[in-house]
Image (cartoon, rainbow, N blue to C red; front, side, top):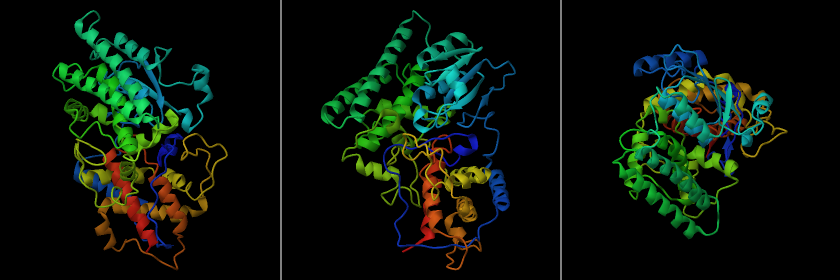
Length: 475
C-alpha cells in the first residue's frame, strides 16, 4: 500500500483494487488560516510527551523490539553478520513475513534490503541481475544466494542450531507432526484462495474452507496449545502466522466471515492472542485495511459478497463511524477488527504525531500527489503511482494542514479547538482548502501497517485526518 512515509525510505507501493475511503461529502471547501504551531514547536511537544509517557518513538529502531523500519539487527551480538534478507518494502508478502519472523524469533543477526513487489514498482536492476526471477524473499548466507521461503527457513534452522531451535529434531514423532502441519498450512492456503477469489460456488468453497479450519483448530488443541506444537512457538507458527493473519482480514472484508472473535474456533482465538503477546509478531503484524487492499493486486482480485459489504464499509471508514472520533476501544472481539493487545490512545496518538513530525518534508511532498498529476508509469495496484508529480505549488497550505493534524494528535481535538492555535476557516486567507482536501484524502488512505505505524496508531491518524478534513469543509 502506498504510504505517506514510503518516499523517505525510497519505496513505491500501492493499495488494492477496491475503492479507498472517501473524505466526508460537504458542499463547500473553505480556505483556512495558518494558526498551527511551527514544526520546531511540535517537535518540542513530542519530546515532552516522550518524557511524560516514558516512550521514545524516535529511538533507533534497529536496536529495540521488532520494527518494520529496521534495516540492521544485531541483537547485541558483535559477531560478523552472515545473513542478508531481501524482503518487500510494504510488508505485504506473506513469504517474506514468515522468514522475517523466524529471524526475529531466533535472534540471528541480519541486515535487510527492501525490494519492490511488481504490483507497486520496478525492481532494481542490481537485484534482478542477482535473482532474475525477481521473486521474494531472497536470502544471502555467507554470500550464497537462496530463494524460496521453505528452502530459506530450512537453511536457517540448519545453519544456526544454537539460535533457539524452532523445529523438533529429524526422526522424532514431533518432527513428523510438524511436517504434517506444514502440509496442512498449504491446504488451508489453497482452500482460502478458492473461496476468496471466486465469485461462483460460494457455498461449496465456504464449506471446504470451514472443514479445513476445523482441522487447524483440532491441530492447535492436540498438544494443549496455545501454539501448534504446544506451549512454545515453533516454525509451524511462523509459517501459519502470515496466512492466518491475511485470511482473518480478507474473509472479513470480502465475505463478512471471521475466523476470530466469533467463538467458532476457540483454539484459533487463543493462538491469535498468544501471537499478539509476542513483540516479534507485533512488529510485523499488519491490519485488516492494509491486507484488504494489498491482496487484490497480488492475487488478481478478490470476490466481494453482500455479507462483506458492511464490514468493508467499516474497514474503509465509509460507514461514517469507524474512521471517526471518538474511537471505540480495541479488544479481542472488536468490530471490525479484533486486537487483543488493546489500545492506549495517548500513546497511540503520540506515535502517529511523532512519525509525522519527524518525516514532515517527505510527508508534505507525498500528500501533494493527491492534487498533483498522475505519473506516466502506473502499476497494477490502482492507488499506487510511483511516478506521480506532486502539486508543489500547494506546499505552504499542505505544510500548514499537516501541522494542524500533528497538533490535534498531540493535544486532542477538544483542547486544540479552544486554543489560540485552533483550526479556523478564513475566507480571505491565502491557504486554499480544496487541494488540501485531496492531499489529506490521498495520504490518509495510504497509511500502511506495519511499515508506517502500528494498527492503533494508524487508526488514530486516519480519524484525526478526517477531523481536519471536516474542518476544511462546511455543511
